[in-house]
Amino acid sequence: MDWLNPQQLEQQALDDTQRLWLTQPKNLTACLRATQLPLEFKCLSQSWQTPVIDEQRLLSTQADIWRREIIHFVADTVYVYAYVSIPRRTYQQYQQQFDSVGNLPIGENLLYITPEITRSPFQFKALPTATAPERVRLLGNESLYWARNSLFDWSGYPLSITEIFSQNLPPFPVM
Image (tube, rainbow, N blue to C red):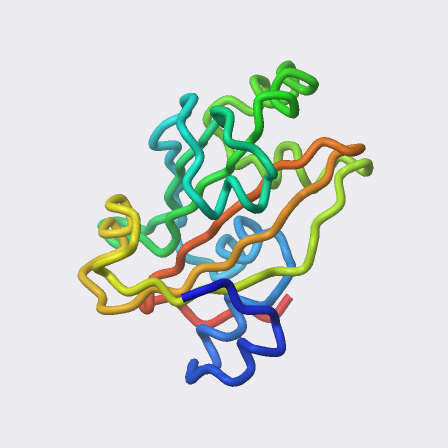
C-alpha cells in the first residue's frame, strides 16, 4: 500500500483514538506524557544504514542514512516504535546538534526548539504484520499497524520521521 494523504486517510476505518494519534501534528512525546501514564523512552539504535525504498523516495537519496530507532512505552506495553532517517549531508551539516541529543527524544530536544526547522504535512500507511519492519513487533502481535511519516526541512537539509502506533494507545489527551 502506498502512503496516503490526509484526505485519503479520512476514508479509512479508524476509531477516534487512532485517528487523533495519527493526525495531530503536535510533539508526540509531549502528547504521550500528557496522558499522565508513566511513560518511558528508549533509544534502540543509532547507526548508518542503507535506506529502504520509502526513505530513498522521500529523502531523494540512495546513499547511507543515519537511522535512529526508538520506542515509547509504559511497563511492558510499547505504544510507539519510530525511526528518524537523516541523509549523510544533513547529518554532517548538523552533526554537533544531532550528537547532543544523545539518547533523549529528538523532537523535544532539537526539532521543536529550533525555529529554522519546518515540518511537512503527514502521510499515512497501513502496515500489515507480514510487511512491517521486524522491530514493529515490539508493539505487540497485531494484524495491522498504522504509521505516519513527515519530512522535516532544516534550512534546505531534509530528515524524516516515521512513527508506527500500537492499536492499544491510551485516549488522546486534551491539551
